[in-house]
Each structure stands twice: as structure tokens, then as C-alpha cells.
Image 1 (cartoon, rainbow over the protein chains, first blue to last red):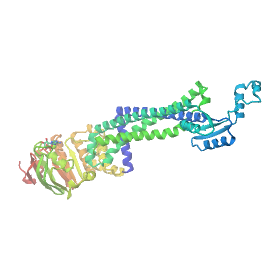
Image 2: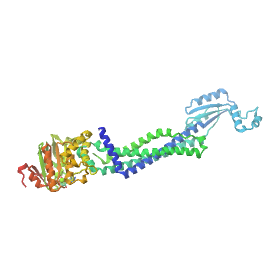
Image 3: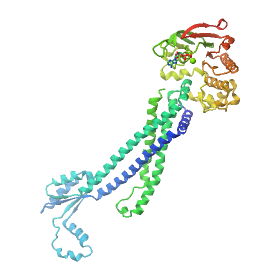
Amino acid sequence: MKISTHVYNVGQGMKNVWRNKLFSLASIATMSACIFLFGIFYSLGTNFQAMVKTAEEGVAVTVFFDEGISQAQIDEIGNEISKRAEVSEYNFVSADDAWATFQEEYFGDNPELAEGFAEDNPLANSANYEIYLNDVSMQPTLVSFLEGLDGVRQVNQSEVAAKTLTDINSAITIISMGIVVILLAVSIFLISNTVMVGISVRREEIAIMKLIGAKDAFVRQPFVVEGIMIGLIGSIIPLILLFFMYEEVIKYMASEFNFLSNMVSFIPVKTIFTTLVPVSLLLGVGIGWIGSRVTLHKHLKV
Amino acid sequence: MIRLDHVSKSYEAGKPALDDVTIHIDPGEFVFVVGDSGSGKSTLIRLLLKELEPTKGKIYINGQDLKKVTHKKIPMYRRNVGVVFQNFRLLPDRNVYENVAFAMKVIESPNKEIKKKVPTMLSLVGLAAKYRSMPKQLSGGEQQRVAIARALVNEPKILLADEPTGNLDPTNAWEIMGLLEEINKRGTTVIVVTHNMEIVKAMNKRVITIKKGVVVSDVGGDDYED
Ligand SMILES: Nc1ncnc2c1ncn2[C@@H]1O[C@H](COP(=O)(O)OP(=O)(O)O)[C@@H](O)[C@H]1O
Ligand SMILES: [Mg+2]
């Protein structure tokens, strides 16, 4: 088709949206709600994932050795640990290091209290490896592997923290996906109904077009444009809303829950939106396109 | 140019709307099709537009078998056949100019050509001055002129008119028939379905009479008698 024809049909499609105000509005509102929720879930999810990531970096598995183990055996265990893919980092903590850390934590202000132990390290058997993971969900696997190694006396882990974080993360993902999928289906349904109303309003015009010799694609195009316009408007509105909301919420969180800022840092709005904008627009356009195609297929056999 | 060979058309089981109709129409002819209401005249028009398929028989337009015009080729075929109706079928939300331009837009004519041809067409039907009027501001006769301009702007070889004067008073009816005759003189084959026997008799053209789906007479100009 010629460019001027496309221009004409885009104009006709926009007219459809306008003539069909009530239905268009309902579709745009649903579409907006859908993209809005999607945006919220996406922002939440992305931030949460970042928190999990930070948490993961802090969650350590500690491996203690059998009494009287040789340095060679300890090195061998270290070698095994280094081969594991889920391990991001591991450090050897000698008994003296452990004692020094302990002293600092518990007797920090009164070092004289620790004097009594000076000659006899009470943590003689507490040499260990501190292991950091790149994926908390792999922790149980690693722990059982470590427990099976020769010379390992005990493996300490923060199981609850790891499991909870992973569970919450997947729960958020599943619930948000579910809601978004339902809303997407509702959007498709509403858009296809809107386009159907548009078709029935313009039945006579379509009949005349066909008698004059309009090609199928020409007859269909304005309705496809109508669906896509609705999808597009329905994704731009929530994106604008989300943009301002996100900044406000971060500001609010930072001021009201000051202590949080030490634990978590929010992802900047720019980072969120570099992904959210194209994905939402694509969703909007895609849903609009599908919605109109569904109807055209059913009700406009040209 | 137009040839129907033993064409029958049945809508449902029952007696056919058209029954074994054979008609030949040469290029440049002007033909009236008359007959009582329900005799199958509109069915004939719709067959020629390929809105309907004959149940039996063959239709040839310019030597082309209409059966062989596939769904994809129908638009191209219809660009050769203009049509006007009793109720005009103008787009009520567009003015005179836009209604005619619409026909060119729909077949994707360049805007430059549209701007050139629409005014010419409107002058031909005598509506150049009213190009900005909306259909509801026009008389029936004027609306039918717009419809004729719309049907002709893409220069079809054939013009079909299904009771074009059915909604018009005698003066307007005469004017519209005169316009159709003028268009025929410029080379377009014209087929007019009508009830208006007074005009049919006066105009002295070929008349095909259909009765209950059967062609009962087909006579040239001077031979036509009631
Ligand atoms: N779409 C249709 N479905 C069923 N029967 C129809 C349809 N259109 C017309 N008919 C019947 O076919 C016959 C011829 O109709 P039509 O061609 O409209 O006649 P005319 O135009 O001469 O008045 C009539 O009996 C009419 O009831
Ligand atoms: Mg009729």
C-alpha cells in the first residue's frame, strides 16, 4: 500500500477510537490497569531481586574441620570448594583470625577481659572456610556436598534466610505473572469487543468500500490501527503514572524508613524504565493487535 | 461484454429468484431491466457484482468467467463496475466532495489525482457548487447525483443502477435518467433496473422484462410495448 493510504487508514483508525468513545475508554482503562500492575510488579520484583542478590552476597556457609586436621587436608577441602560452580567466593579463616574477630565483637571496649585467654586460644578448633554463593537456592546442594567431604566436622548455614528469600521471590513472580496474564486476557477481550462495535457501526461503510473495490487489507487496516492505538494509549498512560509514582515512593521510603537505606538501595527509576518502557509499549501494541485481529477474523470476513 | 448463459440463482430450497436467464449486452449499450417487485432484478445486479454466485449457469464479463474471479481478485474486478442504489448509500458523516473522493481513496489513487478528478466528476453531475454540503442537506436528486459521481469517478466500463429513481419525484427522476443517458453516450455500458414505466417508454431503449425470475421479453427500443 502507498504511504498516503496508510496515513489515511491511520486517520480512520483514530476516528474509530474517537467515535467509539465509551468502548475505547473502557478498553484503554483496562489496558492501563494491566500495564500499571505489570509495572508495579516489575518494579517490585526487580528491587526485590536486587535485595536478594545483596542478601545472597552476605549469606555465608561456614565449614569447620575435624580436630587435628592437617593443613594439607584443609587445602584439599579448599580445592574441592573452589571447583563448585555455585560458589562465588571463599575465604580461609584461621583459629587466630576467628579469635581476633570474636574478641573485637565481644570485648571490643574492654580488651582486658580477654587477657585470661591470652595463651590458650579458646577457639582453637574454629578454623574454617567462609563460603559465599552466587545463588542462594543452591545452598542445600552445596551443604550436603560439603558434609560428605573428608575432614569436615560441621557445616553451618543460614538456611531459613536463604529459603525465605528464594520463596518470596518466586511467590512474587508467580502471583504477578498470574495477575498480569489474567488482565492481558481481559484487555484482549475488551479491545476485540471495541473493534467489533466499530465494525458494526461502520458496516454500511465497509459494504460500500467492498463494492467500490477496496482490498481486504485496506478494509481491515483502520480496525487494526484502532486496536493498536488503544493498546498504545493504554500503555503510555500507566508508564507516565508509574514514572512519577516510583520516584515519590522511593523518596518516601528513604525519608520515612531511614534505617532501610543501610540495608537496601532502590534501583534508580532510569534503570527500571529502560526495560519497562519498551516491554510495556510492546505489550500494549501486541495486545491491541491481537485484540483487533481476533475480531476481524471472526466478524469481518471480507 | 456482459453475457449470462442459462443462469439460475436460488437462495434457499424453493423456487429460484432467477431461473435459466440468458442475456447478452454489448459494450456501450443502455438497457432497462423491468419487472414486478420480487421478480429477481436486484439478484441479477448482485450476481454481476459478484456479491452472489449463480447456482447454475455461467456469467462472462469482458470474456472473463466470473466463476474464475477468485476472492483475492474481486476488488480488481469490481473497479470495472460502478453501482448506484435506490437509497443512494452515501456516507452520512462526509460531505459531497469526501463521498466522491472516498471511492478513489478506497482504491488507493494518489491524492494528486483525487484532487484533479473529483471536481471534474462533480461538474459532470452538476454539483460542483455544493461540494461542501453534507448528504442530509441535499435533495434526493442531488444525493443520487453524488452517488453517480462516486460510481463513475474510477471510470468503470459498466454502470449498474438498481432503481435509481425509486425514491425521487418525477422531475428528479427524469433528470437522473437524463444523466445516466449522458454517461452512456460518453461510452459507459449502463444497466438500469426501474419501475418507472413512463420513463422507460419515453426513452426508447432496450428493455428486458423479468417475471418471477424468468426473462419474458427482451426487446430493443422501438419494439417495446406494454
Ligand atoms: N438474501 C436473500 N435471501 C433469501 N431470499 C432472497 C434474498 N434476496 C432476495 N430474495 C428473494 O429472491 C426473490 C427476488 O428478489 P430480488 O432480486 O430482490 O427482486 P427485485 O429486486 O426484483 O424486487 C424474492 O422472492 C426475494 O424474496
Ligand atoms: Mg430490488
